[in-house]
Figure 1: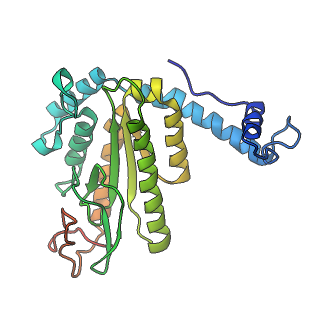
Figure 2 (figure 1 turned 60 degrees about the vertical axis):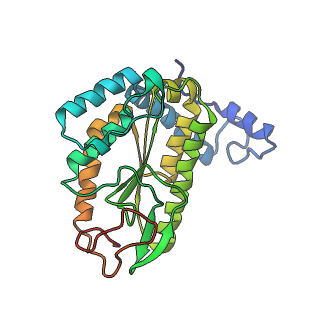
Figure 3 (figure 1 turned 180 degrees about the horizontal axis):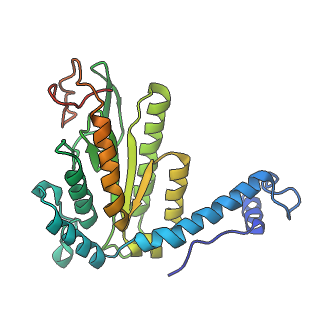
Length: 277
Protein backbone atom coordinates (compact mmCIF):
# COMPACT_ATOMS: atom_id res chain seq x y z
CA UNK A 1 0.00 0.00 0.00
CA UNK A 2 3.03 2.29 0.06
CA UNK A 3 4.77 4.30 2.75
CA UNK A 4 5.67 7.91 3.44
CA UNK A 5 8.93 8.74 1.71
CA UNK A 6 11.88 10.34 3.48
CA UNK A 7 13.77 12.55 0.99
CA UNK A 8 17.54 12.47 0.93
CA UNK A 9 19.64 15.61 1.17
CA UNK A 10 20.42 15.39 -2.53
CA UNK A 11 16.71 15.12 -3.40
CA UNK A 12 15.99 18.20 -1.31
CA UNK A 13 18.68 20.18 -3.09
CA UNK A 14 17.51 19.06 -6.53
CA UNK A 15 13.91 19.96 -5.72
CA UNK A 16 14.86 23.47 -4.53
CA UNK A 17 17.03 24.17 -7.55
CA UNK A 18 14.36 22.97 -9.98
CA UNK A 19 12.23 25.78 -8.57
CA UNK A 20 15.11 28.26 -8.98
CA UNK A 21 15.39 28.57 -5.20
CA UNK A 22 18.55 29.02 -3.17
CA UNK A 23 19.62 25.82 -1.40
CA UNK A 24 22.44 27.28 0.72
CA UNK A 25 20.25 27.32 3.81
CA UNK A 26 20.00 23.50 3.52
CA UNK A 27 23.58 22.72 2.46
CA UNK A 28 26.49 24.89 1.39
CA UNK A 29 28.63 22.13 -0.10
CA UNK A 30 25.97 19.71 -1.39
CA UNK A 31 27.25 17.05 1.01
CA UNK A 32 26.83 18.31 4.57
CA UNK A 33 23.50 19.75 5.78
CA UNK A 34 23.45 23.04 7.64
CA UNK A 35 21.89 23.17 11.10
CA UNK A 36 18.58 24.05 9.46
CA UNK A 37 19.07 21.28 6.91
CA UNK A 38 19.64 18.80 9.72
CA UNK A 39 16.46 19.94 11.47
CA UNK A 40 14.56 19.59 8.21
CA UNK A 41 15.85 16.06 7.62
CA UNK A 42 15.02 15.11 11.22
CA UNK A 43 11.49 16.43 10.78
CA UNK A 44 10.92 14.44 7.59
CA UNK A 45 12.14 11.33 9.41
CA UNK A 46 9.82 12.03 12.36
CA UNK A 47 6.81 12.71 10.11
CA UNK A 48 7.34 9.50 8.17
CA UNK A 49 7.74 7.46 11.35
CA UNK A 50 4.51 8.83 12.85
CA UNK A 51 2.49 8.23 9.71
CA UNK A 52 4.00 4.86 8.75
CA UNK A 53 4.07 3.30 12.21
CA UNK A 54 1.18 4.94 14.07
CA UNK A 55 -1.35 6.67 11.86
CA UNK A 56 -1.83 4.00 9.19
CA UNK A 57 -2.85 1.40 11.76
CA UNK A 58 -5.49 3.76 13.18
CA UNK A 59 -7.28 4.33 9.87
CA UNK A 60 -10.30 2.10 9.19
CA UNK A 61 -12.36 0.99 6.23
CA UNK A 62 -16.17 1.16 6.22
CA UNK A 63 -16.56 -2.39 7.63
CA UNK A 64 -14.30 -1.76 10.62
CA UNK A 65 -15.82 1.68 11.22
CA UNK A 66 -19.36 0.30 11.15
CA UNK A 67 -18.42 -2.45 13.59
CA UNK A 68 -16.88 0.03 16.02
CA UNK A 69 -19.81 2.42 15.62
CA UNK A 70 -22.32 -0.32 16.47
CA UNK A 71 -20.31 -1.37 19.53
CA UNK A 72 -20.48 2.21 20.82
CA UNK A 73 -24.21 2.38 20.13
CA UNK A 74 -24.69 -0.75 22.21
CA UNK A 75 -22.57 0.61 25.05
CA UNK A 76 -23.90 4.16 25.34
CA UNK A 77 -27.33 5.71 25.38
CA UNK A 78 -27.55 8.56 22.88
CA UNK A 79 -29.89 11.04 21.26
CA UNK A 80 -31.09 10.45 17.72
CA UNK A 81 -29.56 13.79 16.74
CA UNK A 82 -26.16 12.33 17.55
CA UNK A 83 -26.43 9.80 14.73
CA UNK A 84 -26.49 11.61 11.38
CA UNK A 85 -26.62 9.78 8.07
CA UNK A 86 -23.94 9.99 5.41
CA UNK A 87 -24.58 11.62 2.04
CA UNK A 88 -24.42 8.41 0.01
CA UNK A 89 -27.28 6.80 -1.87
CA UNK A 90 -28.61 3.28 -2.19
CA UNK A 91 -26.77 0.52 -0.32
CA UNK A 92 -24.10 2.98 0.84
CA UNK A 93 -26.70 5.12 2.61
CA UNK A 94 -25.86 4.45 6.26
CA UNK A 95 -24.97 6.26 9.43
CA UNK A 96 -21.97 8.58 9.23
CA UNK A 97 -19.87 6.20 11.31
CA UNK A 98 -17.04 8.48 12.42
CA UNK A 99 -19.32 11.44 13.10
CA UNK A 100 -21.63 9.17 15.06
CA UNK A 101 -18.75 7.83 17.14
CA UNK A 102 -17.51 11.35 17.86
CA UNK A 103 -20.98 12.53 18.88
CA UNK A 104 -21.67 9.52 21.10
CA UNK A 105 -18.33 9.87 22.90
CA UNK A 106 -18.80 13.60 23.46
CA UNK A 107 -22.31 13.14 24.80
CA UNK A 108 -21.18 10.30 27.07
CA UNK A 109 -18.35 12.33 28.60
CA UNK A 110 -19.71 15.89 28.70
CA UNK A 111 -21.45 15.58 32.09
CA UNK A 112 -24.80 16.63 30.67
CA UNK A 113 -23.57 19.92 29.22
CA UNK A 114 -24.88 21.21 25.92
CA UNK A 115 -23.02 20.58 22.69
CA UNK A 116 -23.79 21.72 19.17
CA UNK A 117 -23.28 18.62 17.05
CA UNK A 118 -24.40 20.33 13.85
CA UNK A 119 -23.83 24.10 13.87
CA UNK A 120 -25.99 25.85 11.30
CA UNK A 121 -24.29 29.18 11.81
CA UNK A 122 -20.82 30.66 11.96
CA UNK A 123 -18.62 30.42 15.03
CA UNK A 124 -18.76 33.72 16.94
CA UNK A 125 -16.55 35.00 19.74
CA UNK A 126 -17.71 37.83 21.96
CA UNK A 127 -16.25 40.25 24.48
CA UNK A 128 -18.24 42.26 27.03
CA UNK A 129 -21.49 41.22 25.44
CA UNK A 130 -20.50 42.32 21.95
CA UNK A 131 -19.41 40.34 18.88
CA UNK A 132 -15.63 40.27 18.56
CA UNK A 133 -14.92 37.79 15.73
CA UNK A 134 -16.96 35.59 13.43
CA UNK A 135 -15.13 32.82 11.60
CA UNK A 136 -15.52 32.42 7.85
CA UNK A 137 -16.79 28.83 7.77
CA UNK A 138 -19.28 26.65 9.55
CA UNK A 139 -17.65 23.81 11.47
CA UNK A 140 -18.87 20.28 12.19
CA UNK A 141 -19.22 20.70 15.93
CA UNK A 142 -18.78 23.16 18.80
CA UNK A 143 -18.65 22.69 22.56
CA UNK A 144 -20.68 23.85 24.34
CA UNK A 145 -22.14 26.19 21.68
CA UNK A 146 -21.23 27.92 18.47
CA UNK A 147 -21.05 31.23 20.39
CA UNK A 148 -17.93 31.40 22.55
CA UNK A 149 -16.99 27.74 22.16
CA UNK A 150 -14.29 26.08 24.17
CA UNK A 151 -13.59 23.82 21.19
CA UNK A 152 -14.59 23.39 17.57
CA UNK A 153 -13.89 20.45 15.28
CA UNK A 154 -13.96 19.24 11.72
CA UNK A 155 -14.67 15.61 10.75
CA UNK A 156 -13.40 14.22 7.46
CA UNK A 157 -14.71 10.69 6.88
CA UNK A 158 -14.57 9.35 3.33
CA UNK A 159 -15.35 5.64 3.56
CA UNK A 160 -17.05 5.35 0.19
CA UNK A 161 -14.91 7.54 -2.04
CA UNK A 162 -13.04 5.82 -4.88
CA UNK A 163 -10.50 8.57 -5.64
CA UNK A 164 -8.81 11.39 -3.80
CA UNK A 165 -10.74 14.26 -5.38
CA UNK A 166 -10.60 18.01 -4.99
CA UNK A 167 -13.35 17.92 -2.35
CA UNK A 168 -11.11 15.90 -0.04
CA UNK A 169 -8.13 18.15 -0.71
CA UNK A 170 -10.27 21.22 -0.07
CA UNK A 171 -11.17 19.81 3.33
CA UNK A 172 -7.53 19.92 4.39
CA UNK A 173 -7.10 23.53 3.40
CA UNK A 174 -10.42 24.57 4.93
CA UNK A 175 -9.01 23.36 8.23
CA UNK A 176 -5.89 25.42 7.54
CA UNK A 177 -8.07 28.52 7.03
CA UNK A 178 -9.87 27.90 10.32
CA UNK A 179 -6.53 27.52 12.07
CA UNK A 180 -5.18 30.78 10.67
CA UNK A 181 -8.28 32.66 11.83
CA UNK A 182 -8.02 31.14 15.30
CA UNK A 183 -4.32 32.01 15.45
CA UNK A 184 -5.13 35.64 14.66
CA UNK A 185 -7.85 35.62 17.31
CA UNK A 186 -5.46 34.33 19.96
CA UNK A 187 -2.58 36.61 19.01
CA UNK A 188 -4.58 39.85 18.78
CA UNK A 189 -7.48 39.29 21.17
CA UNK A 190 -6.10 36.72 23.64
CA UNK A 191 -9.05 34.42 22.93
CA UNK A 192 -8.24 30.73 22.61
CA UNK A 193 -10.53 28.15 21.02
CA UNK A 194 -9.29 24.57 20.79
CA UNK A 195 -9.27 23.33 17.19
CA UNK A 196 -9.54 19.62 16.40
CA UNK A 197 -9.41 17.69 13.14
CA UNK A 198 -10.82 14.15 13.04
CA UNK A 199 -10.25 12.03 9.92
CA UNK A 200 -10.76 8.47 8.72
CA UNK A 201 -10.76 6.09 5.72
CA UNK A 202 -7.70 4.02 5.07
CA UNK A 203 -8.27 3.90 1.31
CA UNK A 204 -8.85 7.64 0.90
CA UNK A 205 -6.16 8.98 3.20
CA UNK A 206 -3.49 6.29 2.95
CA UNK A 207 -3.74 4.71 -0.47
CA UNK A 208 -4.79 7.87 -2.32
CA UNK A 209 -3.85 10.84 -0.15
CA UNK A 210 -0.67 10.19 1.81
CA UNK A 211 0.76 13.56 0.75
CA UNK A 212 -2.21 15.24 2.41
CA UNK A 213 -1.57 13.31 5.60
CA UNK A 214 1.87 14.93 5.48
CA UNK A 215 0.17 18.33 5.16
CA UNK A 216 -2.01 17.51 8.17
CA UNK A 217 1.04 16.67 10.29
CA UNK A 218 2.64 19.90 9.06
CA UNK A 219 -0.45 21.92 10.09
CA UNK A 220 -0.33 20.30 13.50
CA UNK A 221 3.27 21.38 14.06
CA UNK A 222 2.64 24.84 12.64
CA UNK A 223 -0.03 25.31 15.31
CA UNK A 224 -2.99 25.61 12.93
CA UNK A 225 -4.73 22.64 14.52
CA UNK A 226 -4.35 21.65 18.17
CA UNK A 227 -4.87 17.94 17.79
CA UNK A 228 -5.62 15.47 15.01
CA UNK A 229 -7.46 12.24 15.77
CA UNK A 230 -7.11 9.43 13.25
CA UNK A 231 -9.82 6.80 12.93
CA UNK A 232 -10.10 4.45 15.90
CA UNK A 233 -7.97 6.85 17.99
CA UNK A 234 -11.20 8.66 18.94
CA UNK A 235 -12.18 5.79 21.23
CA UNK A 236 -9.41 6.34 23.77
CA UNK A 237 -8.41 9.94 23.18
CA UNK A 238 -11.69 11.82 22.74
CA UNK A 239 -13.16 11.05 26.21
CA UNK A 240 -10.02 12.54 27.78
CA UNK A 241 -10.32 15.68 25.66
CA UNK A 242 -14.04 16.12 26.43
CA UNK A 243 -13.43 15.87 30.17
CA UNK A 244 -10.88 18.66 29.81
CA UNK A 245 -13.55 20.77 28.08
CA UNK A 246 -15.95 20.16 30.96
CA UNK A 247 -13.32 21.23 33.49
CA UNK A 248 -12.69 24.41 31.47
CA UNK A 249 -16.41 25.11 31.20
CA UNK A 250 -16.81 24.95 34.96
CA UNK A 251 -14.34 27.82 35.36
CA UNK A 252 -16.33 30.14 33.13
CA UNK A 253 -18.62 32.87 34.43
CA UNK A 254 -22.12 33.42 33.03
CA UNK A 255 -22.30 36.25 30.45
CA UNK A 256 -23.07 39.62 31.98
CA UNK A 257 -25.37 41.14 29.37
CA UNK A 258 -25.20 38.96 26.28
CA UNK A 259 -28.37 37.01 25.51
CA UNK A 260 -28.29 36.47 21.76
CA UNK A 261 -26.38 37.36 18.66
CA UNK A 262 -28.92 37.79 15.86
CA UNK A 263 -28.59 34.98 13.35
CA UNK A 264 -25.79 33.24 15.23
CA UNK A 265 -27.92 30.31 16.35
CA UNK A 266 -27.44 28.10 19.41
CA UNK A 267 -27.11 31.22 21.57
CA UNK A 268 -25.74 31.05 25.13
CA UNK A 269 -28.35 31.18 27.88
CA UNK A 270 -27.91 33.70 30.74
CA UNK A 271 -28.60 31.07 33.41
CA UNK A 272 -26.02 28.62 32.09
CA UNK A 273 -22.24 28.55 32.30
CA UNK A 274 -21.73 29.42 28.65
CA UNK A 275 -20.43 32.83 27.77
CA UNK A 276 -17.39 34.94 27.12
CA UNK A 277 -14.41 34.22 29.27
